[in-house]
Amino acid sequence: MLASLAIRDVVLIERLDLSFGPGLTVLTGETGAGKSILLDSLGLACGMRAEAGMVRLGQSQCSVAAGFLPPEGHPAFSLLADQEIEPEEMLVLRRVVQADGRSRAFVNDQPVAVALLRRLAATLVEVQGQHDQVGLADPATHAGLLDAFGGLEPRRQAVATAWRAWRDAERALTEARAAIAAAQRDEEFLRHAVEELSALAPEEGEEEELSRERQRLQQGERRNETIATAMSELQPRDRRRGGPGDALRGAARALERLPAPNEEAQPILTHLAIAQDALAEAETLLERLLQEGGPDPRRLEQLEDRLFGLRAAGRKHGVPVVELPALLASLKERLGALDAGTGRVAALEATAKAARAAYLAAGQALSEARREAAGRLEAALAKELPPLKLDRARFVVEVAAREESGWAADGLDRVTFLVSTNPGQAPGRLEKIASGGELSRLMLALKVVLARGSPVPTLIFDEVDAGIGGATAAAVGDRLARVAERLQVLVVTHSPQVAARGAQQLRVAKRLKGERAATLVEPLDKRERREEIARMLAGERVTDAARAAADSLLTGGLL
View 1 (tube, rainbow, N blue to C red):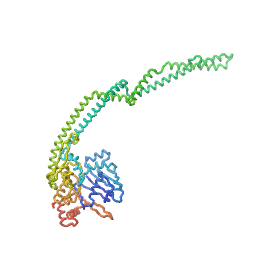
View 2: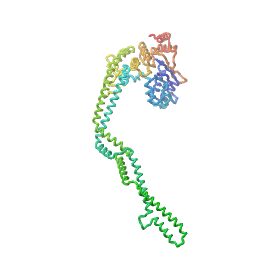
View 3: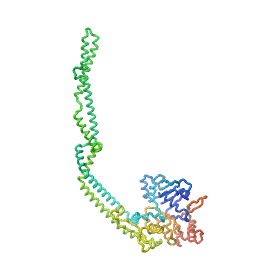
View 4: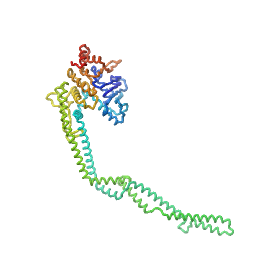
């Protein structure tokens, strides 16, 4: 329910904090006192359009905060969870409007989009005004209202489930047909590509492995070339150019020809001998390395042919080499879908046909139940209308079959509430036939009948008693009180008969504050209520007779 409303600097309201309880709360006051400002303020907190003109003159901004206490399991909690907003005991919708018309929205002090305020508010409060019965005037809501009255939610859910299953089956069938059509257009390419890639047979991770082996083989080739170069320096093929061994031996022979004694040459000869031995050892080691062999040149050639072939295929198909195995699998799947497509489509067609039949059966069962519930709703409304000065009105619930193109998750029907307010008049859409006051009372009658299944815990009626009085106004008050037994109801009224039925009464008044007018709202105690209702009965001059009449209304008497 709506628990509180805090208003700051909205038009004529400087500061106002209101608390609301369950049951029926009535707001009374003279015309022009500012009752509409209260509703506009609440609408602002509920995400309605913000205008710069709502900011009180001389102020930079205005704000409104509406505090709600949703019952356990209320849809508002799901919306909060979707937005990752931590739920609290009180749900506070707040709106701040700058003097230039820009606004900000908050839920439990967390900034949110205005659209979220509207979505939350739609689950929490419903305003019915002389020109604002959106819920009743919008035919899109009529099927839901009828289903709520008839207790048809399980059937409606079964239809929605069957609808989704049918849609899913049709979507799968459409996709399969499109895939086959595309495959048929590309059949020649597919078969050639599959044949080519199958012959190539790319494997997962093959390119990386081939690259590593290629690098190893290339390094082996460079090793052998280096060893061969070193050996050629030690053992040149050109015998005319002696190698280092020949040079060492020649030097030794030359020294040995020195005349005796040649003691000074002996150390040199020793070193030359050592050098010859070391050189011979180096030659032996190099020959051994060469004899051990290196990479097979044919293996490197084969490896490079494979690697370049994979890369050429990748370029041809516009994918990295690593994706070639997946591409081959995909092309095979498409080709397989083409080959097996007829059988798959036939199976999906059968599934879609069965799903359509299941949806149709569930929809027809709901349609039959709706027609039965429509008769009961018409009968229930017929009992409520005469006391509301709508005795000549005829309320009709039209359950009309849609064309197949119009079938939807809510069933096969188009449910429309129609009304005729005069004998001989053909029933028509509510907003075109009923006046503002008639439409408000029709809404009230519907709420009386549908209160048990209402998903919205708070209802607000703006002057539902406009243009009526006496017994009709008393009937309106009685029905408001009946609805308030199950839902929280707030009503703006000029009728003493309606005001007297309230569990709580707030008086809206305009006072001069300095040189400015200001709107004030005062909760009334028992004595003040008596005076206010007497004023509503008598006008400016409250008489003892008016007070006695007020006492009669407050104690449940009739005027």
